[in-house]
Image 1 (tube, rainbow, N blue to C red):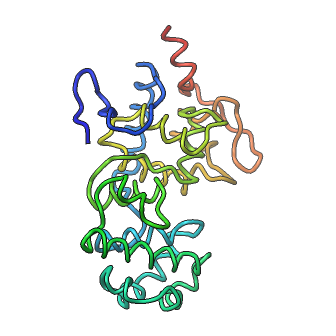
Image 2: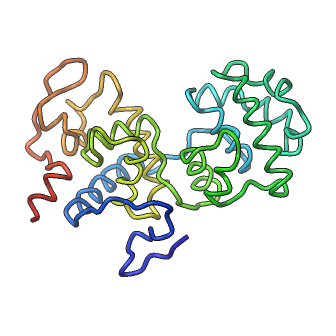
Length: 262
């Protein structure tokens, strides 16, 4: 990981892609959002249950297009049956399937888990790798999964997790353009927030998305954070078709903040 220096304050030079240029006003606004979320959700954490890095990796693979609650119901018996990566490698996808049938796409996920654990055992000595590039060589692992594992299991911030909640909040809070892909949303968030906050912030964004900034029936009409930062508060739109009270403290969106500073 690149160390932050005065000429590289975000510590981003080791990334395999460029992140957008953002101005001081945009970064200052992002800091205010981060503080508000930290005050609201100081104890936000990964919702998946795990004890070891390989258990987190498996749980994260299972969580794709499934709920964390559903994954947590299935994993205790799965983890008990296969305590180590070697146990998965020696098994077959069909044996793994029996423990995860309650989870969507369980057949494909069983194959991914078997293949990923076989690679961990054979190529990494039974230890989950600690780099983004190595994790991405495992079946069933994309940047989101790798970022979850690196950040939660090893304390390494090498990516900003973008799930459906974070994508929704990033766009409603004006942190990324509405037409941005998931990959571009991640790059905007990486540019706006200090690297050492990426994992903690992802948990707080997710918590706010689950409780307040929902896909449907959002609660911006009554939530102080949304009233201050969400574009819905600016235009007076509330959840379930209601009109929201326009908060006089609502801040400009990031793009507007940048324009005002020029």
